[in-house]
Length: 165
Image 1 (tube, helix red, strand yellow):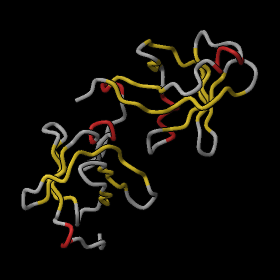
Image 2 (cartoon, one colour):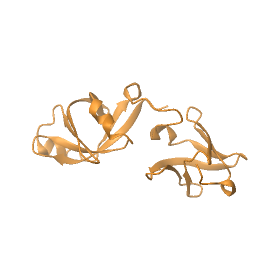
Image 3 (cartoon, rainbow, N blue to C red):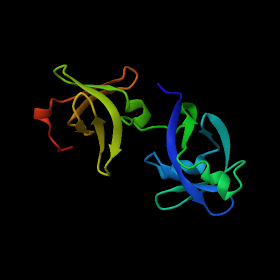
């Protein structure tokens, strides 16, 4: 499994003292409140202050003191070490761990590799791009087994899908 987990992407500067606005790539915006350090381009940066907006976090990072310095971080991702990540509930997984998992149906048919996970609000959707594009709702009635250590997900065959959860 990956040592680092992506938690957000810097979208633009905020204000005039070098703060950055961050689009969260986690389902818990509150997790930003406890950040002490983040990794940007593999370099550890101290988080000095965190403000939460409705759907974004605003961070003041050590050494970033101007709008120009903040603007140079636009598009960069924020990572944390796995050991510093939030603890997950049972049957919950980091998106980073699901990406790259092979998806099979219960009959053994290889459906492809998870390219990304789409958050829809009601449930996540596993996105497979190849060999054929497929969107798989992450519902207990469909997803039968997830083993991120073995990079393997097993789902019910498509003809058996039921959306009652």
